Image 1: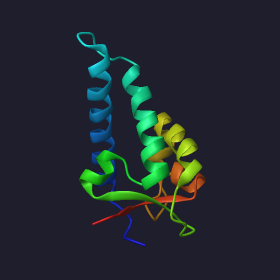
Image 2: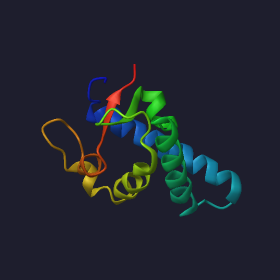
Image 3: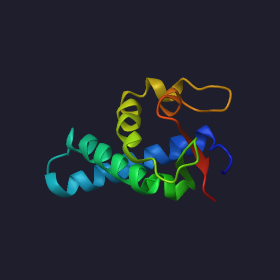
Image 4: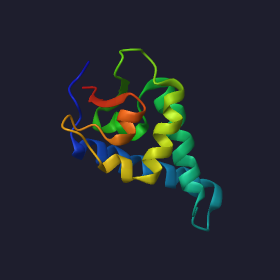
Length: 115
């Protein structure tokens, strides 16, 4: 398993994912702003990409991925509560000594460097 990703990389990936979700939602709402549609796009994008390949577009750009701590290959359905807890943001800022957020501890995942 790779090294634990820094907070800076995780935040950078998250912000990039928000931007990607906003731009995708904007394609459907132009000339209006997407409002909450961008949050729905972010949630779907996060669950699908993390669940199936362990990395969202933003994660891939900054070189991190989500892995299960038990070593299994796919995050799978744990991506759903993980995304829901990330959406609330509070669990993501409560970190342990290893830098794992509460959402990662509850879902048995960890964000690691992929390159």
